[in-house]
Length: 290
Image 1: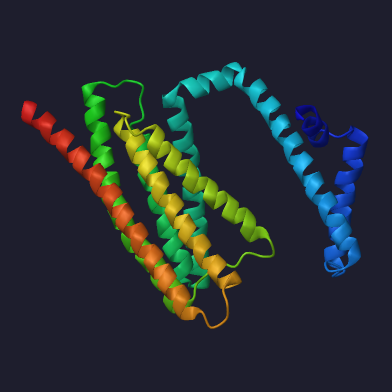
Image 2: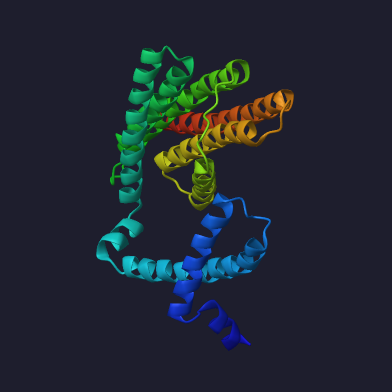
């Protein structure tokens, strides 16, 4: 039985090549001409399903091979085993990306006189500022002096994270009152949804993985990432409600968006207050010992 399943999932290369290309071409032809209810469609659907199945199996195996080669690379091993390098690289990337996006949004907001763009500009610039604060104290040396500096930065980040609630509230108000929503063309919204789900899952994984970490900068970074992921989900929610929601569902959309915004503000406040409490307690203890 196992051999039969293996043969089904790993067809002859020539047969697999033919079936996969037939599936792609037939689906384009069927949906472009509106033949989705015709006999040709019912004939093609099982072939397409089978082609997609063995393609996913093949793709997974190729990714696995590539990943195994990458894992043997010395540079990758150094990166994977060194939390300091991982954190610094991630913070550099996020700081640069958020800073560029913030500047572009601010320029667009001033040029078009758009409160929406300006609100998003402050959001990205605030994110960039918080990560830049953390980046300044990411050091290999875990001496007491560096730990104190790190907790001071974390306390500032916690206050800025609380301030982000005002920006998030502004976004929600603009969405509800002015119907400011990002509309994605065609099927791009599915790619955006896939990326946003990756962000939220990745953020939760990092929160769980480093929950026992004694490094305050790691804790602050993972909380910031979680907040960013939740705000991205709100943006996705508003776009999907607008594009796929039924007509005359404005009141429902308003309630959903308002509730989601409130939940994110509450969670963000809890994360920020947790950071603030930990940093303040540590700094008070150090001050009391002197």
